[in-house]
Length: 451
Image (cartoon, rainbow, N blue to C red; front, side):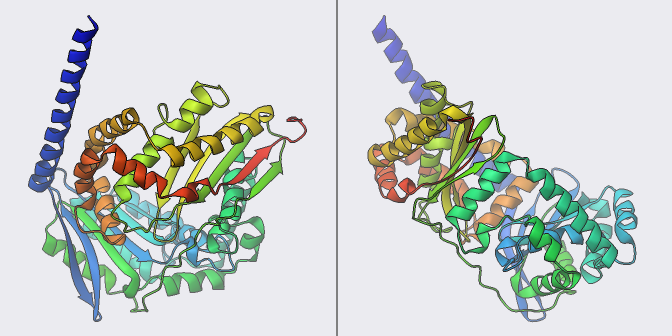
């Protein structure tokens, strides 16, 4: 009877492997047949601005992003929250129409237009039906030419930001995560919360914000991401029309903040019924490292996969110390790190931290198992079509390939690399990253309750 089950299991595994291979091949063929992703350029004022383009006629829509590099919170300098504040102010419409009037004109034609600042970039995002796109582009042009940089709008955004920060003080996940960044990135822009602090927001002036906006929106640091039911020629025409309103500027270097290799600990005493534990360590990998697919598999096994991950199995399933435990690897141009978190009873925080350290140490020393690798492959390969379903997803992926220095189609080719990855190669990669053990830990807890 056992032999029969074993034979059936082997046949099932063979069937699954063949299905994965066919799915990968079909996905590649479909992407080649249905969409066309390209990197082209348009020259504006003697600057060659890259355009990430995809034509997709599935729906009569057009999506555009105007991305400015080295313009996110890494550029805050001595004013934490400056980039995020500037992006919020840019969402207040134009000086002539105001926030309400500008929003009404967009709403009447179902046009979405927003601005947001990340860690590294400042992004204007425009989306609409094809028939309304040129009108939306005109609105975006007017926003670039005359943003609503008035005292009234500035004070409105300051009040909103201070209110958000006030609410964040009771969000202990936010408090612990912010404290961890302070430990890992001490004396770098990433040590400060991207939203800023009450003190830094109070010190901001309209002049500082206006200067940030005027000096970080330029041709030399611009990338256009555009796609939908338009031709490449139309995309270049729209991009050129939009970019013509920008000054040339000068290329900016994106600063790189390396997480501290010194293990640091911080306990914050708050009236909390749970201990919020955030942990992180350096992860020595560049944004354009071709071994990223190995990191993706390793991180999935260690902490990204939820149930079935090492952290979840050891902390929740075996010991019942937390409802969930999570860990992930983030590889960006400005920084690369491993980080994770969990919540547990105040009285259990010491045991939970001990287990986290032991799990990571064992993972670095002994690596993954064959069963864990097979499970990771099944999920990562099987779920891949879900990551490229929409135009937005595909454009985002194409942009990240260009932005991080990969050739077009790299993330798609990762599938074959993951499928071929063997256990020995994976474990050699894991062992080559002992810096995962250099954990810094921030805890928000009720100190008296845990005694």
